[in-house]
Amino acid sequence: MKIAVIGTGYVGLVSGACFSHFGFEVVCVDQNAEKIKSLEKGVIPIYEPGLDHVILENRDKGRLTFSTDLKSSCENAVAIFIAVGTPTDEETGQADLTSVFEVGRQIAPLLKAYAVVVIKSTVPVGTAVRLRDVILQTNPHAQFDIASNPEFLREGSAVEDFLHPDRVVIGVNTKKAETVMRQLYMPLSDQAVPLVITSSASAEMIKYTANCYLAMRIGFVNQVSDLCEAVGADIAEVALGVGLDKRIGRHYFAPGPGIGGSCFPKDTLAMVGIAQDHRVSMSIIEEFIVANDKRREDVAHRVAAALGGDVRGKKIAIFGIAFKANTDDIRDSAAIIAIPSLQDMGCAISIYDPAAMENGKTLFKNIKWCDDLYEAAQDADVVVVLTEWKEFKDVDFAVLKSKVGVPLIVDFRNLYLPEIVTQAGFTYHSLGRAAKAAQ
Ligand code: UDX
Image (cartoon, rainbow, N blue to C red; front, top):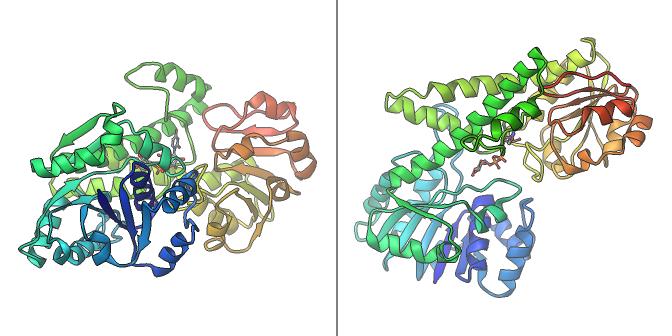
């Protein structure tokens, strides 16, 4: 069976590579010829652990190819996956579907033999119906059905999340389309992965609801963390005591500098927009957005407070600018707000991140870019941990102490046991627990 995947971002590339890993013949299509050329040479344009291995193995087996040509790529495909970007429309706050409908118009004339057009991109409820209309308006004789097949891939673990998902969500409205989609996902359903076969509207709602719930969960634990600081409780112990309730769960319940990335900020805004369009209140998510924006702005103020308020001329070592560990993605990361704020306060900034430095250099100016965390810490008045890279967790405190100007750490990821840090001679500020002076 042949599949075409249109769009070679982390969703399209991971999906295409993993479908070829299942044994299907896959063509990954992109209009960006440079990107396609790199992929054909085995150069993977995104940082996604394990993706290069899956791509190279299946490219060499001839099951995975790359092309800029839509016509030949869609020829004889049983399914055409649309995995193009749906960024936030700055005016409306809604998802910008321009690329999705543009692809619909481009593939419509190609749908001579039946194929399932699968929406993999995150799209508002009702998009499947609109895409169907766009295709039929372009080619009334097109032979196709639409399926909604949202992804639940996390950056940094996308290959794992595709190959071992908790569930596969499939929105279809014909038996024919259902049969094709069941065939494509048999490698997973044969491993007892549940298939949720539903309508397109429900499939589209599942995606937004999942992301908004997860974002709200983090927003909630962040506010609980602040209250823990105020009342002298310990967020890790509170999260454990709460999370052991199987209705709540211990995973995905750690405080941080505010959520970032390419999905949650976009999807929460889109969900609020959809609700407003239908005159339904989604005030809980609206409040999450306000609280999360405020938290991201507070990062610089927390650092200033730890420095005693007088920050002009201080040297700040930033450990991590990626929005989370195991990715090079800095979109909507806490650093995006914190670094310019600290520079406006008159601070000098040095940065080290294991993967996101190149992306950071396109954004931040007047920075001392460092090759490792100890170089970044050299003569620093404070070390600020923004990303939970394992490399930072494994820091040698004795070496770090010998480098810094002032032994002070502000940790927005609670990487360390306070006792270890204070015994090493550092004053330690973290989230949801009392600040600890050096011993
Ligand atoms: C998310 C969803 O998890 C995924 O299912 C969806 O398909 C895409 O969006 P991603 O954006 O890659 O994935 O990152 P995720 O790991 O979910 O983290 C999102 C944000 O929450 C990050 O800023 C992260 O630092 C933060 N986070 C996550 C916390 O602050 N605490 C946690 O315990 C978990």
